[in-house]
Length: 169
Image (cartoon, rainbow, N blue to C red; front, side, top):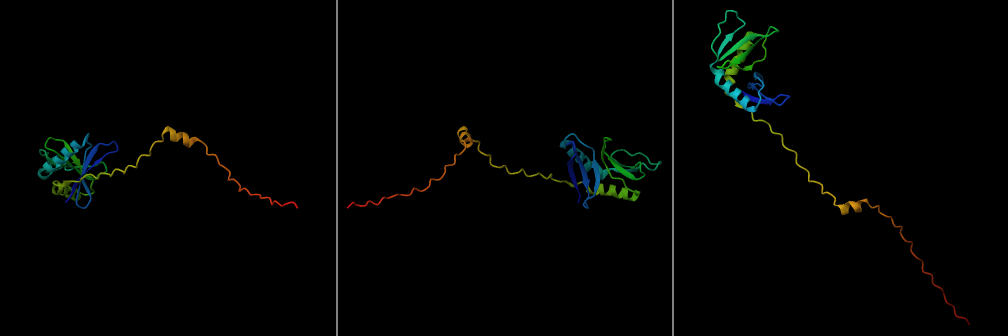
């Protein structure tokens, strides 16, 4: 089964991708102002994808269907892609481009199959463990710390001089 992955753009705005079980992105959303909007977009895919008709706009004889629908279109490079259009006419999501019409239609089948997937839980980065704050030095400790330490030379041992007293005869 697939999953919905909500991510943020460089500017921090949310968007979502519907990812198939094989890890391929099969539908990408627009950019929303808030996460709430992205969740609403996901609910719209869940509601509209299973019942949406498929309309091939690369065929000039194609008749436009009522919404919701998968609209197959031709890209500038000649490849094909599809848009999922909601009942209100808004584009919910867009596929990647495909080199063949068969691959494009398989992408639509995959969206229909994976529409009721779960939303991936965001990975929350663990906060780094705060280091213990270094105690601030008090004024007395600062003053002591600034005084230069005097080196005291070691005293030389004193030799005791004893005089021999001799008696006079």
